[in-house]
Picture: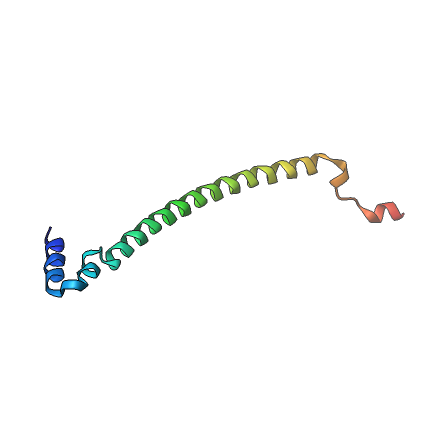
Length: 86
């Protein structure tokens, strides 16, 4: 109430220029918008971090699975090239 009453008093003093005084101050509107944007960005960062951890975990599982397949396959086994040359 105090802030609005100050705006009305300022408006009465300035007369015809009062329309500029009565509208919400851009600073407070801007800070509200910035806070909302920051809240949205913070939520998005949290969601991306969570997804990143999930994907890292899945990559570790897939990496281990691929290693197990490669070790079980004779195609990927190391060969002794010296013994084949003899």
